[in-house]
Image (cartoon, rainbow, N blue to C red; front, top):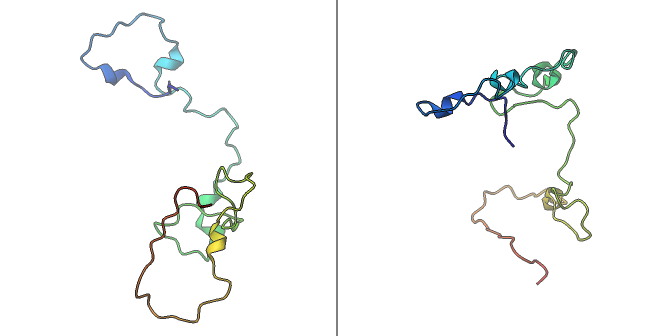
Length: 121
């Protein structure tokens, strides 16, 4: 899809370009087509997800882009494309321990598990 709202007149700088009067409508030549919202579309929209007062107990920093007024735990949700399949799907909630681990020692080794191909074999 071609976005007509971008000004591409500088793409052919120095090249011979044939310009015919009336070849393009005025809105396509303006370079700002589609950039202005219709009147009243954004009226009353307060953009609260960027307001730090929504969640004052959250420490603000570079890692906080937006804030949700109603956060939802989606760790048990299936990934995109796997919502309607019949078989069992591994989710992040399945990886949580059923009981808290009492051992607080630092790990001495790591396991690399590669989940690929057909897991029914």
